[in-house]
Image (cartoon, rainbow, N blue to C red; front, side):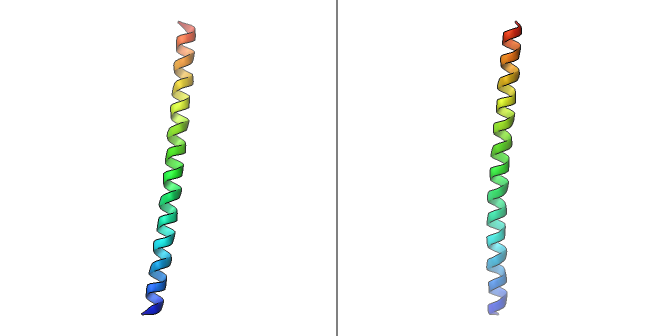
Length: 48
């Protein structure tokens, strides 16, 4: 029973760290898209 609880705790920890990694990756990607959009927008306004 103790072993099962230990494994569950490890699973929970890995899930939390995975969740954190996904959040970081998502926010990084959103930042990248935002900057690409700003650069694109700037290029359009310069050409007008």
